[in-house]
Length: 174
Image 1 (cartoon, rainbow, N blue to C red):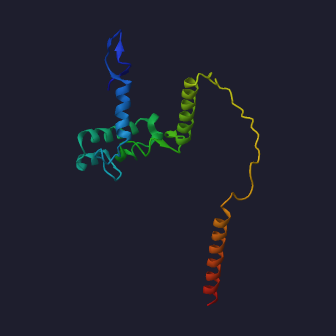
Image 2: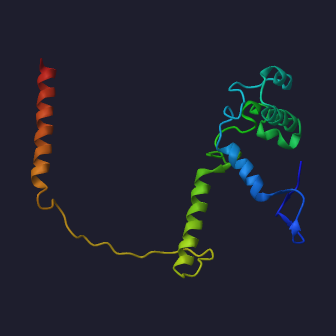
């Protein structure tokens, strides 16, 4: 186990792994399925089963870590023993579950806020700072009905519908 650092300590490279390296490592496994990493598609019942599954060494260590962490009460709710065959990763990195991971809704909201902040900075607008923006707009009717040239198209669709209804009625009668 290594500490995560910002990469520098007093101007020189420090000990540990950088946050960027951790993000790349996690990203690598998030974009892969557990099976492509060499895991088994079936649940692993016991840690002793790992000896007979012939998993790659790194994959076996990750599955074993799931069993080790499952024995710690603080990680009990993660159900890591059940998901050891998926290397402790029970699905998509963003789920609908508020308990296990980040929700898609939260990701969309964060992305929207980030893009809005970028757009405001690009156009030289002040930050919202938690304020709400109220858009007061007025709607006016510009046109009702069909535009020029649309009437023949609508008439052809209606004729087709009437013909189809007549055919269905004939078939039902016979």
